[in-house]
Length: 366
Image 1 (cartoon, helix red, strand yellow):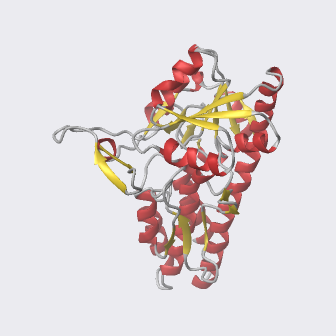
Image 2 (spheres, rainbow, N blue to C red):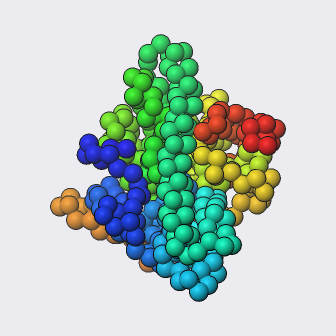
Image 3 (spheres, one colour):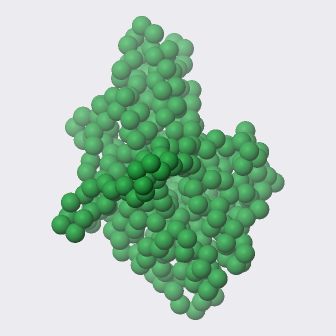
């Protein structure tokens, strides 16, 4: 997508040195646009753990490139063991996003083949990491096409009046290699000339809506307003939301969807107000070994400081952190919640739009 009119992906091999992986440091947005070079598995581990990169698809693509760097680091003596160990290190960084373990397992399956020399394995690792990133971008582009049809139908019913879309957290191109999941249909609709507007939840505690979604919507010229996390239900009650669309970090075989904390509450409000609620994600986010998302999807608990401390820009342009609670106040910080399939209108993947239920999923993926 575009940044100041120039196309970027969120991750790529550095031009002129393909042993370095370049990323956009998302912890600096929206106030600074900075590119960081990752040169080792440890760099990649830190980038995922500390959320320099985040979002299901991008975590997967970063893991893929991290495994390519692992191939460069492994020596010829016990290549496979070293490569697999690096995969274990990367997989342990964050527990909820399925794309992470999916990418690592895919790289290991492709690279750790008996009878292939270390140099050939490094070549395969590079090709597969690039394939994962390219596939992520292409799948997200198709999600945009599939979701566009939903927005078109709403626009037709409204006879050209603005289509109001609510989203939670960031599931745009910053969360993937390109295009995004939940925002890909928005961008497709914008390009198709549909009159639309996006309500952007701030998404406490890390404020990915305020910092990332609002920033990228602005860069693409999409009409939007930032709202407090607790405003969505009020807007739905007053007919100001035509559809809600969010991303996902892991989706169970029966359609339960884990996404940023607070998504479940939006789904409840949408159900109560007859607002269609969609979950968009690439197929790599499915976990077909889980059949009860609420009970089985692992929920990451992050540090209390993310709740107690906020960062922002002061009037004089200084970027700083401030504490928002008493010194002695403890905090708890769950990163995700699970929206049960019964609250989801439809799932949107690169394969199409279908029901959030076991039968519909296995008809398409079985």
